Amino acid sequence: MLIEGSSTLENLNIFYIPLIAKLNGSIQSSSGKVEIDFKLEYFNTTSSLSILALLRHLQSLNTTKRSCN
Image (cartoon, rainbow, N blue to C red):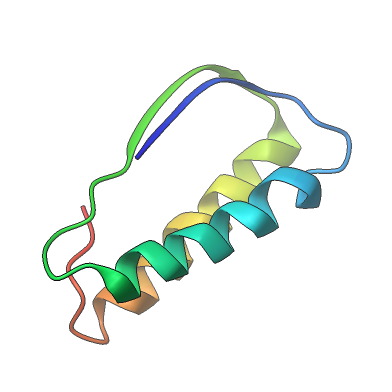
């Protein structure tokens, strides 16, 4: 999965909540590794908090014996 561009949305839930739901589905249906590449040109402070929450969520999935890169 590739996440690229700029993240400057006023309401980040519009993007990040559906993204987390899609990741949950991808990870649970995957028999192998799921790779996520971040290629962000710019992200604002609010976006950085959402990205951190996304990474923490992936880390919690990884501790449940799913491999996340």
